[in-house]
Length: 114
Image (cartoon, rainbow, N blue to C red):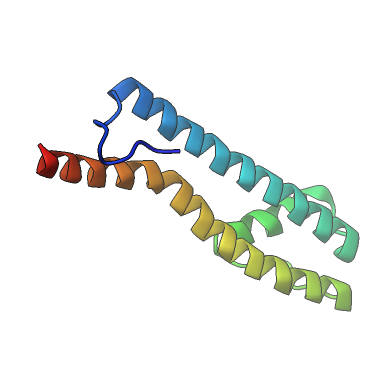
């Protein structure tokens, strides 16, 4: 996917395009995760979509749910979604920073080989 250390770093325009593609992928993952969370809260807890959005967004943001689950299914869903949201947070951070870290490391290695 990325250029090897034997190739020069890509031009700035291509690098910015790469970063934007990674940000778009991260945004798509967040949007899909938010929709799944909203559907789960609506189904298991019977929350209106605004409350389901708030709970899902708060979990994805690392803050925790606003409404405590009342049903057994809702409790199980909220726990599993909280674990999933923690993983999504790490994946999103990795997706956004991967091209930046790669470029920095590539420049160091490219300068060593010259």
